[in-house]
Amino acid sequence: MKVGFYGHTRQYHNIKDEIDGNISRVLESGSYVTGPMLKEFEAQAAEYFGMKYAVGVGNGTDALWLSLMALNIGKGDEVITNANTFFATVEAIWIAGATAVLVDCDPVTKNIDPAAIEAAITDKTKAIMPVHLYGQCADMPTIWDIAEKHGLKVIEDNAQGIDGAGNGFKQGERSAAVTTSYIIQKNLGCFGDGGMVFTNDVTVDETIRKLRNHGSPARNVHSAGFNSRLDDLQAGVLSAKMKHITAWTDQRIGWARKYDEGLKECSSIKLPTNLEGYRHVYHLYVIETANRDEMLKFLNDAGIDAKTHYSIAVHQQEGFPWGRDARIAGSLANAEENAATCLSLPMYPELTQEEVDYVIEKVKEWDTRQG
Image (cartoon, rainbow, N blue to C red):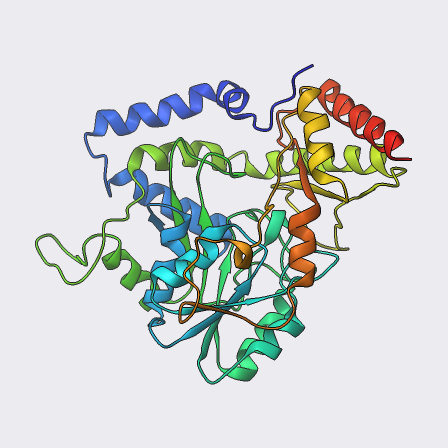
């Protein structure tokens, strides 16, 4: 049996009429950039997310560095974030001209460790950028308290956590901005690149709207800016999909429970932790095992398209500009262990029971061989 890692084509066919209808509306309108469909989707997204403003931009990376720029964070400033995250989180800090300060993750949730954040703060620290890794919210109440104590801004990297929530808190409640990515691999993905910034701060909203469009608040009026706009075709795709995101998340949670139950007796792997009261959206279902590379090959050879997220921690990447652009704060032992042992099983709403059962069967077969 073949089990793919993504269900993009299945998802498209499930709601084809809705997506095609929105694309047709855009094509018939003749307005494909910053047109009515983008405005419609921005309003829809802001209402869904429960924040005042939503600004569509070119991709999730741009959403991060444009947020930093809108908050006047750049050269000479430090931003604290995860060492175990996709490279773009830290890359965005570098692009904005600030210094990325990498701290360790919690050994259980793999999200940023609040104690490590507080220990890393200096007089140059201006912001904290927690990542809702794999789809489970970081410990935002503690992070918000730390930020308020030290007068820092918080920008949440929500590329993997859309539709998630914590125990008694919502994403963005006390943050300056929340960013997300809409690339096709995400839980809510378009048919290319896309991103968004959510905020309750009208100045941040207005600034990013200018920055994304060549610094233009009105036609023929420009200042310093960039070209980073979510186009209307992608907004149409996302608008159709957003109506289903809650149901899709529920299905992901259901499959995660099947994995949890089916693999609970496996002694050679560690299952992901779902904190009590949290809505873990399972962008990724990540297990950990000491012989990760061998297990990955075993599953791939069995037709299961398992992957790793992320097998090289940011500070272990040769391609990052170290020195003034980044520094390490404290031990990153947990992040390094996470990189060395993580393995992502197929996880998407369109999986079938047969496919999930087959993945469980093969993981258990691997586990038995380790005994």
